[in-house]
Image (cartoon, rainbow, N blue to C red; front, top):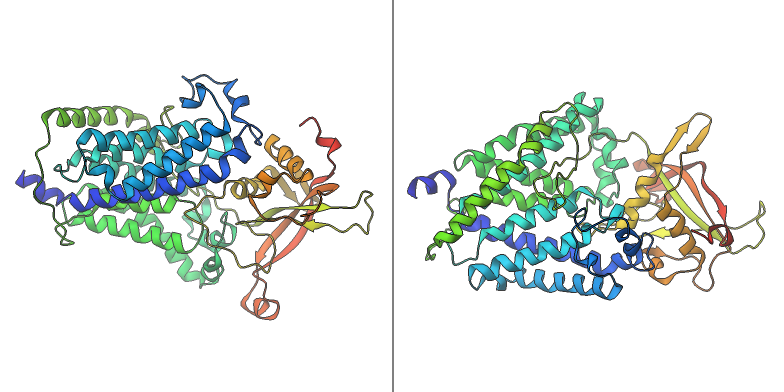
Length: 485
């Protein structure tokens, strides 16, 4: 025991920080479900869950909604998750026996798994699987009065290793700008949902950007190996990984991706070094140790494919090898866009379209639209509709002759239809509805290139962005056109 303590340090603080951090992230995640699930996926949503459940089996996508789906049950799942998250955040779930603590965390996992497995494209983000995996293994950290085991701590460090290493290797393998250290020239301008500080980060000198890209390779490809070194080396590695995530947090909006990575970084912290050492623990029951060793063996078996993926030249990013989203492959920004394109949605009350028709823009809560609006800070909250609209330009070819749209998503047509009826549930997901009194007669979507203004330009006109119209993403449509969608 003394030898283990010397190698791994005191695990009490790591357990505390991971549990509280995971509870906070679960709370944010269930709040997004409460506010956004029904308009996007409910009975009258853009991709209704009942339609999806008719196409998939429980075996393919385990979810309690296979028993039955209703918007009321979705609300009950979300509220249950919120309440359990608050109890875990307050430490109440860890005050009782082991089985109470473990059960509470596994229920949180099962509830969110039920959401993600029917969430389709709106819950298809890599950090959904990350939350599920981290939440599942957090369940085995045990309550505060039981001596912590190194097994779940090492499993969480292994997850952090795969997250960072996957992100680092996908960069080096995919985009030349990561290899020549120029990706950061573009990143802050083209990232999904910039915040107010992103503009300032974009305009820092290019040598600093190049250093930042090189340092990112060190953090993601070198530092993770030291997570398994003895203390204080593992702690230093954890601090390095956490510090990089904090920079990403203040320079953009990535939902809870960076916050979750910070929480995983806490698994490397040593209570002795930070003057927080636990004492007075009850002994771990033999049965509990047996469960933990079984967990270690199962995790080792599930790690074979993700490990092979890391060394593969055809490395996959954000991929789940099982329907329970455990021990997956992670990574981000294998490619960095060099230009920023935005789909801007407009409506008009004019019944007859002419050259003089007045078009009014819909505004989203997070993504760029009005060039003078200060980019907001929304993370760790996740604006799912904003993100999906940000993805749309990836289905467009931009050439010197104009743009070519390869096709439109079903959910996008249904979204436009909801705007044409002033659907209150969908409009709550937007920042501003330019037609508060009556729905528009027509809606269209324009395709723009956005660029940050310079300091001189911003001083003159107060705009954060300049934009240039490149073409039409969706021609003007009325309700009759989309009646059957």
